[in-house]
Length: 154
Image (cartoon, rainbow, N blue to C red; front, side, top):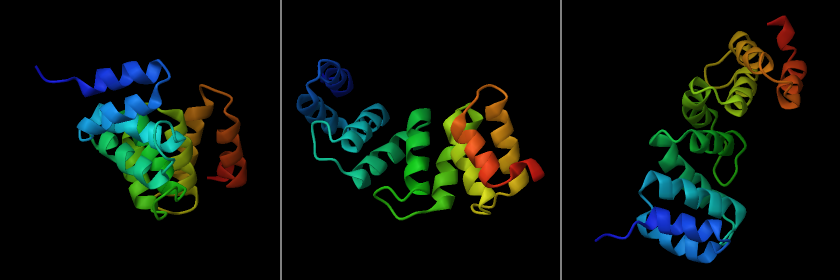
């Protein structure tokens, strides 16, 4: 019987045994769920040395498999050059499906990319994304982007 590295790793993680969680998850690092968990561990330096490059690598694996929180994390990493060169096209690649899934933080990040005129976006699309977020929340981050880029004029 094969070992379920993901569930074993998550059991250790939930028990606060991050090193043991890492040791199990790394055994199946191409599994998207394991990859996402490894991204979190590397991002936070839990059970391993903090490493944004590796974190983004693992988030990207999970994001390509459709794991929405990984899409947000990978997109944010590429937008903000966290362990990888800043790449707004890659950021948008990961953020768009998360936006379609309704993820507010992805919408705010993608809106800012578009408001800057990057990744083929424009201010009108940026304003639409921010308005979607503000329709359901009082997001201070969304208001900051809306105001900073004067999206009320878009």
